[in-house]
Image (tube, rainbow, N blue to C red; front, side, top):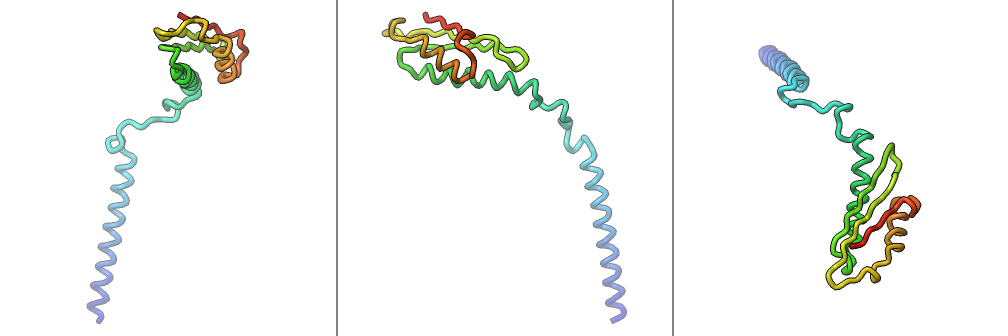
Length: 131
């Protein structure tokens, strides 16, 4: 019985030492750049405020282009948003008509209203050219 208790204490001591050494090794690995490679620091993140704003306007332009191109009278549409310091300066929309369409079939004022409401800007900042 005494011998069995000594064996259990040895096993517990060996197990404790192994767990301690594994803990030290895990801590060293997680602190090492070799294991995780180059970490992205918060200031290096691609989700900074400077990068989020332009990509939002690009996304908005892509969505409006997609919606306008769903019209079978419009073959191609390109929307360019000029902005500075989170404020839209102007919007240019170049619309290419489909082969069977005429310029009178496209209502540029409705397109201007659509862009105005989507971007929450006055229609005076929007220039539309139809080809």
